Image 1 (cartoon, rainbow, N blue to C red):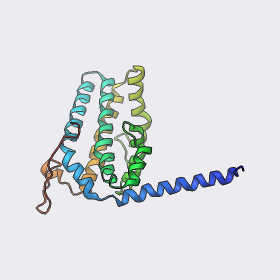
Image 2: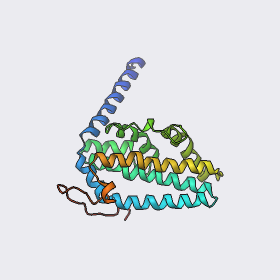
Image 3: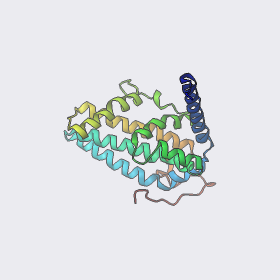
Length: 218
């Protein structure tokens, strides 16, 4: 017995709506302490690696090697997205068997494009609209990152394309803005006191314990 095509696509449409609602609700239900524990434990080691990558990218830019600056800046951006934004939230999500299955389908290891796809939805839960951020020249940060900077990095890596100094500058600005405007905002919302202690694992609050720092890359 054949199925009515219109009925079939209608069912698919409502199933997809249901999946999106499930994702949004699960994100809202994830305990924030699990997110704080991840960042408090691993934040310092992650920050150190990101700062090292950005420092090398800046050095490449200043030394006249913009293509390597673009590659380094995007590497830092991907580290920020994966280890300081997406993974902390998913750390709490592992408490749910349903989420564990969802992760296999949507955020498999190494799929940075999928992490970028889901990040704006995650940040909306905390009242952050990443798509509204702007760079110093007035361009939209997220659009520039996805459609210009990352594509440029891909052409450099896979096709050996050269880069202009201005392209390196924009890539480095994207990396800095992502940490300063997004990561630090999340940190503040989660109760971290980086502005006072300079560290993720140290909390300037007598009512909260410090975390035992560890390295997620080992």
